[in-house]
Image (cartoon, rainbow, N blue to C red; front, side, top):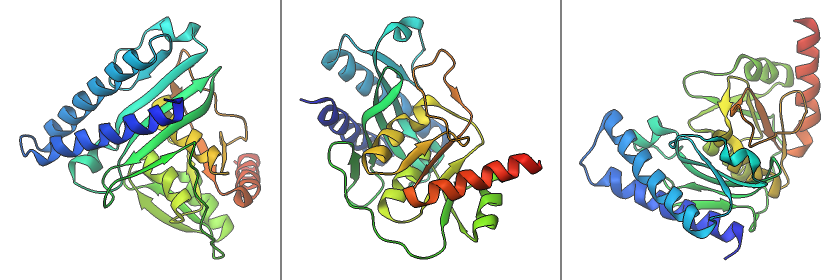
Length: 248
């Protein structure tokens, strides 16, 4: 099984497990989110340790160690990206399984189990991007819209689209529901690793909001910002951000 096939298989299986946990009716509220996180994480970590024992591993729900820092190949996973949305039985939550090689997100899968029938976006099977000729649509958090994204939308005459998890937002660009995902409110490596790998495989632009590359498997897993967008919007967005920085 290739790395991409493994990532897709594990993301899909973890998503099915999460639906079973939620549909069992045994948990609700924060307890549901905790149970889902722990159950999916246990499955993903065990499977990766068994299938790729020589690789490093970083998961949001496991204690981090320095061992991964000496590895070239490191899997970065988020068992439930969008715990609140998962608990609310919404569709905008995701499972992330990504692989970095020498700090670059190269392979991965993002499962959206909440969609009808479930959907897995993967690096080895890119789909065509839908055409959109209207004003740009910028994805923002449901609860904390990033000020930079709001300002860029105003500069570009764009529209704001509120959505839950980071993975759901990135996949919304692939699905044609939006054009730009600009985040500046702070995340962690597991929030964007798999989405960035999948986005790149689909021909999207991925970077920090200053245009520099996204680098993973760092000692400090905090990532302040990122930009994932259709390629035609990368330059206008980055130019707008630079202009805003000069006048700040």
